Amino acid sequence: MHNDEVSYADGQFAIGHYPVGSKLAAVQGEDGERLAHLMLHRQDLTFALECCLTLSNDSTLTSVVRQALWRSAIVAWAKCFSKSHAGRFQLERDKIYPTGVAHDVYDFFRKLRNKHIAHDENPFAQAHPGAVIAPPGSDRKVLQVLCFTMLLDTESGGTDLENLGLLVETALNWVTTEYDVLCARVAEALETRDYAELDAMPGMTINPPKAGDVGTRRTAR
Image (cartoon, rainbow, N blue to C red; front, top):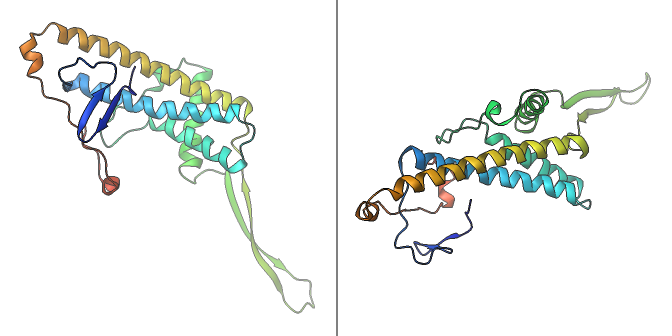
């Protein structure tokens, strides 16, 4: 699976490994849509894996950086198993992970993302307001109003980090295999067409994102 071979500048594509190519034709239809979605999944999962590897290999990270990497990895991984309003298909737990412990680990991290990291719903984060009442005879009856907080540290390295890394790596391997198999199948089908038909295929077009697109929904493929 090669993505870094393609560059885009001044409205033109450059294909590094294929200098003799006459055009870059767009792969459309269901196969094109699935290839696009698989590549987007791969980008998220690669990012999540890099976060996990950095957490595992760099002991000098500050607490806030560790938390940032930990939460980012979970969100990027879980995103691939969530519904997308832009039409990107979601990965399925039962197709990727074996039953048993792997499903339990998957369910834990999904709940961690949904109920704690992305939303504040479970007891992992708590705040308890209270008032410090002064002894009788004091100048003031209430010395201070305060709030006692408790936050469970869900990033502690060890087994949890290993489990998250395995979840991400397993999903990434599955996506990579699916992508490679589909690429080969599409190439084989195109090879059977006449050259004139291939040459008549629409060229690939791209509209680079702009800051103003932040609130818009990507067109479903």
